[in-house]
Image 1: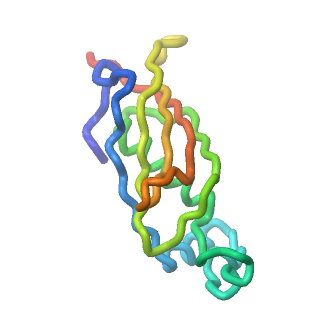
Image 2 (image 1 turned 90 degrees about the vertical axis):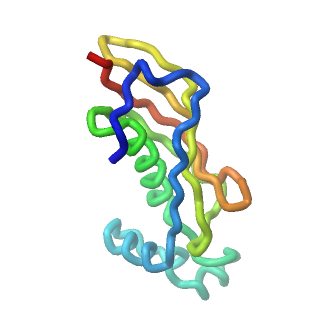
Length: 143
C-alpha cells in the first residue's frame, strides 16, 4: 500500500503513478478458475487462433481489476473507490507488459465528501490505449 493521499495534495491535470502488470497464461488460468469465466479464448491458444485472435487474450474483468488496483493503490488506506468503469476497445495478450495509467480531471466537495474524478486506461507496450475508463474516489482531508 502506498502512502496516504490527501485531497489537498491533488490537482486537476496531475498524473497517477503508473502501475505495470505482466500477465501470464498461468494468471489467466487462475483467473478463469476464480471468476468462473472458462471461455477458451483466455487459455486455449489453438482455439483463440482458430477464432481469429492473435493469441489467448486477457479477460475483460481482469483488465478492469488492474484499473481498480491502480486506483486503490493511489488513494491509500483511507481513500475510497466510489465508481469504476472501463470499456474494452483492444485486446491484450499475456507475455507482454501493460500499464495502468490515469490523470485527475476534476476535484470537488459534495455532501461533505472530498471527491476526485479521473480518466484511467490500460496501455499496451506499443503505447496504444486498449481499455479506457473512469473512476471516482473520495479522499480524506488533512487534519
